[in-house]
Amino acid sequence: MGKDFVLDNLRRARTLSQARRMMNDEDADGSGLILEADPARDVLLRIADELPEDGRLEPYDAWVASGDGDLVKLVRALQPEYLAQRQFRDRQNGLRQEVGALWIEAQEAWRGQRFYPDANSTLRVSTATVKEYSPRDGVLYTPLTTVRGMLSKHTGEGEFDAPDEIFDAVAADPSALDIPVCFLADGDTTGGNSGSPVVDGQGRLVGLNFDRVFENVAGDFGWNADRSRNISVDIRYVLWLMREVWPAPHLLEEMGVATRRTAAAGQPVMRVRAGVAPGEEVPAGGK
Image (cartoon, rainbow, N blue to C red; front, side, top):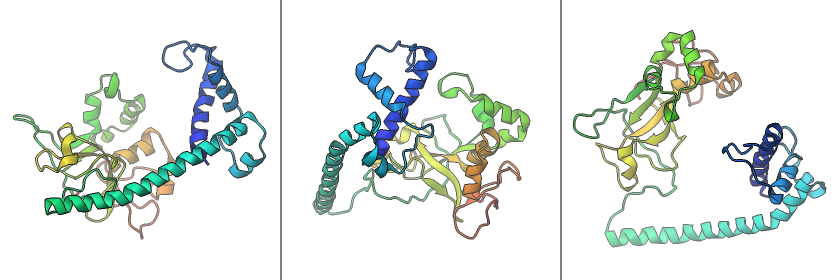
């Protein structure tokens, strides 16, 4: 019914409304600009103030059917248009599926062979090896980065601004400097693969894919052994952040891993297969 879309935007408006009251209309959008009067914006902010503190509107269907506030009136007014748009998108997606299959079949018949199935929104499983690479003469990028290396690049500006909490955690436990942060591999990835799990040969989660090196931007058109490198965050770094930097024990317990780092910096990983007791950690094998 457009619930997520409506609530997400109204929550943002509600945050803006709160900021406006605290800052007396100055720089409330965070852009350094004074917000000008806008009747439509004022109505939206007023409607957003009807949201409960936790942002929940449950049961949703009953709220839409019986509510009488400005917010529910807005939702009712938006629903027909939203449903029409969703039905249109569903029809278009269905047609694309039919036409797409015929198009691929025609392409293969014309070429006389199958061609590279990249960047087409299909499920992919890629095998890979953690590996360095050399983008040009005299330059070699090793495959592993550490907390030590990350902090050595700290400038306090832009992408090189390491949070104070990381410095504090390292000061409390200097061995954390050796925790791996990211690693390179020659996996065949594409746009939309960010967040995909990276598992080792024993089915253990060792990282999450999230990027590609600059030289692999053209990887959508074909994998290349010399330049195709994807970048993954090491799960040991993720667990360290969740344990020591920004503690999130409830998430760790939900995932079934220990809430404290009990092994050496290079050891803890988590299993993704069944049969492992909650909190059990296993040594990291080759990736």
